[in-house]
Image 1 (cartoon, rainbow, N blue to C red):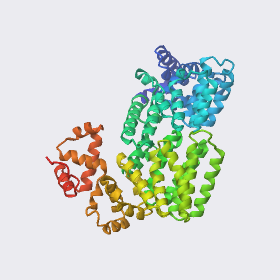
Image 2 (cartoon, one colour; image 1 turned 180 degrees about the horizontal axis):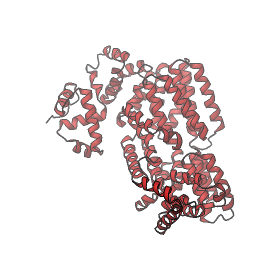
Image 3 (cartoon, helix red, strand yellow; image 1 turned 120 degrees about the vertical axis):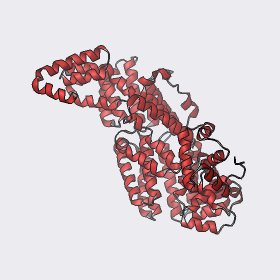
Image 4 (cartoon, rainbow, N blue to C red; image 1 turned 90 degrees about the horizontal axis):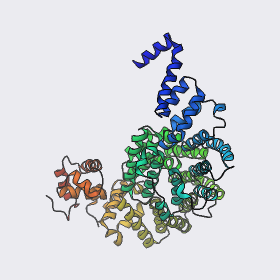
Length: 572
């Protein structure tokens, strides 16, 4: 009806339309409803008035995460009109940076910095310093971002930083593995949440990424949910802020075995991932897509996804992300025995490492870890396990030193395999047990399921090792992976030490849940005990029913008993 009436107005009395828009923007402006005022001022062709309204609300839109509105105004207002409007340009530069349009952000920011530098004691100069540091951080230069803050802000003034400025520090401290300082950066007053959606969303996302890196997956999922809910509440379900956690949330689900849903979740948001996600979210989203394709042994699709991720990352100036996907390329090529192509990818990786030295630990340090892993993998593939052990040990130790257990899972498997093939079985089994114990605690399974054929001999031999054999949860994880491949099932049949390999059907978390069910607890009671939502428990219960071919809780308990999963539980 409104469209019909507007059409009639434009047809019969077009001369009244501008005046109606003026009345509308006057009404909205009197109530400080600036975005609506801007809309009507532009519609009335009163562009000078529109610019004045933009000046009133530009930074608020950035803080609230409504970047698309801000960028739309930038397209609608003539460039000559915004020329000289330093505050508007600064807000636009920040908005451009947040949607990874870095060249445009720099072009807007540079003249504003030059103008503001005349008074370096002003608040406006401090805002310019922050936006430049944020731009460096979003370009993945954590050390450069921190150095810029240190060089251009007065000593001891970090507490005066904006909430987004504090996130720049968090990112720098994370990549330097300075955990005390990371968690010491002050948070904002919860009462300011609605006015600082972007800052709070990034803070929670950074916390979630650190938790996932440490294999604290439940904490990571809870933080992701909190960040997403806040973004939806204040910026909308289809906003950039709401999609920021998509990659991380999907990656945790992937690691826990929910491969299909994780892949679909990323594909649903792929347009935003490709156009507006910052490096960490982008990296995790494409990691899910690449690993899911490789898990299906669709190496052609996996390599195409790697090439796409490399291209997008290179266009945005993210050398670390390019390096990570070059390492994924090396892994995929070696799976198909394409050693010479893997060496070519390694040469590109070595060039990136040379161009990005790391006198201090920072985001670029991960480039050098990727190089060491790539060198180790190619040494292993070309029959030099001793060389592989040296390269992989250095990379693994750095990952452990920076609390990056998530990446250490896969590199630990590589190193254990290198020890095994070098004839150091005890070192291989000790490291293998250490890595799998981390995985069991996090309920991570897919990292091992990705490579059952490649690691078959290590898996089967480790299963018969006394130390590993004495750890039932680790054995269950190994058995589950072996049972899912034909060669693995054959290896299990040849191993008389475990007459019930079917026990591998359930994950560690699922085993704990079936024990609670056997004890008579409801989904809500189990959720309270484990500190998760009832919906999460409901999902686990459905998965348990499928795996045990059960149609009821009682039937699931009986079948779990028959598999020896409830030996120490008194069934109610």
